[in-house]
Image (spheres, rainbow, N blue to C red):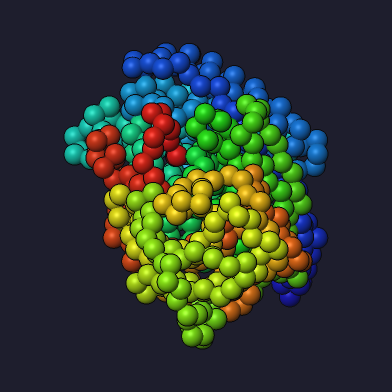
Amino acid sequence: MITSSLQTSVAVFALIILHVSTLDTFKAAVYEHAVILPNDTETPVSPDEALFLMNKNIDILEKAIKQAAEQGAQIIVTPEDALYGWKFTRETIFPYLENIPDPQVNWIPCQEPHRFGHTPVQARLSCLAKNNSIYVVANMGDKKPCNSHNTTCPSNGHYQYNTNVVYDAKGKLVARYHKYHLYREIQFDVPEKPELVTFNTTFGKFGIFTCFDILFHDPAVTLVKDSHVDTILFPTAWMNVLPFMTAIEFHSAWAMGMRVNLLAANTHNVSLKMTGSGIYAPHSPKVYHHDMETESGKILFAEVDSHPRNSSTYPPAMNWSAYATSITPFPGPKNSFRGFISRDEFNFTKLSESAGNLTVCQKELCCHLSYRMLAKEGDEVYVLGAFAGLHGRRRREYWQVCTMLKCRSTDLTTCGQPVETALTRFEMFSLSGTFGTEYVFPEVLLTKIKLAPEKFEVLEDGRLVNKNGLSEPVLTVSLFGRWYTKDSHSISGGTSNSATAYLMIPTLLMIITLRDAVMV
């Protein structure tokens, strides 16, 4: 009886301690890093040369990590490819790789640097976390030996993975994630299946994935819907593509659509249009950075709800088609036309007046727009567009998109081409669509590639509307839907060689015209 009472008291005390130590908010940091890149080579460098380059990049990350800790941040996210860049073959990446064990081994590399072989990068990252008492999220390469007699084993006897690692404030490895959706990454293999990686802290439950993964159901959606994470950690090397796929635009929209915190750290490379990092809450961006003018890195900070579902600002679930299916389509104008955004053929209709109500449809999707401009600029043309179908050259991902966007010029054939500045302000807009998917991401992008925090909202019936009066000049207002169950292809397993890996890589949005440009 005494023993039972003692056990009960201990259990209650433990629960009290856990409750007290749980934080309602936490301070997050993300760092956009201008990577020091290796020299182009067709032959592998030595391991010492590879480590020398990685340490040069870690020297820069160290300053950001120390700054984050000094500012009271509990966690910092650094970008994908931050240690060595992205232009490799399977052979030339190999000297940069380390064996990264499963976190279940209970390992603090800073204290046991040789426990799993030669792991100087992991030891240094672990020490940076431990010595600064901060969670550190980093991206590096993992190598796993395999049986060369196995037909799926690559010729060099190793699987090679694009990998995220997380070290807690004591330097312990608490998470390892192998990127599943590779983008033109012939140096890496595809894991056998998508990994659902989560870990718990006193400031919420975290999930993690990498860059191109965000456009697919697994692991991204599953982590939020089934694993119920509070915050997603998102290292990326994202090349901006207008009108829908700039980093700050889509990542903030994904956080709103999925109603989850997203900590996004992008690499910084102006020549490849890589910039755009942010800390995004379910209701609005907390802070973001987009810089195509300088070659400098940038650290961002924000206070974030540890458990956003418990917050008073947590948005309700949306019925994305409720309003659009409840109304009669607006009378069709005579000036509808077809146009392309990349390889996707949209149906467009011109906003001919300074105010009006328009509907444009394609297949099962009808998009409705009500709008009122402050004044219609004579040399600026806006259109309402609809697209429903398999996206891109490979026709694998099913998109449903409703968009109001500015054309590049008064020539309607330029509608959908990249444009970065605008003058037209809208007093009111309301955009909705008859979406067949529950996964819709609301985007508003303003002139000079800026977001519009607190200037728009999504109503429960699926309407994307402005609020708080007049908008800044608008580039695009979009509802970007992903109908995952209508995708024509998904990666189903690992790869046996680099040629197979390349064939399994999905396409994203456009034909890359820059010779070395990649989004990974």
